[in-house]
Length: 77
Image (cartoon, rainbow, N blue to C red; front, side, top):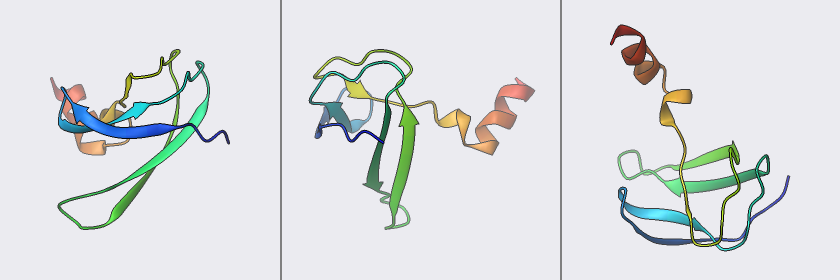
């Protein structure tokens, strides 16, 4: 697994975000964790870059891919 350099910063999407500090080529495995405010527990995320990510870009994911409730909502709408 390749560890990529990142930083926390202000997100225009949701307040606080994780940003690339280096170029991340498409297909690169990367992982990160964050403290979930509701549970007080750290959440570990493993992801694959779906496209080239430039330094300074925010790392995002599609929560619907691992949230069964959200996936069900997509089917019903």
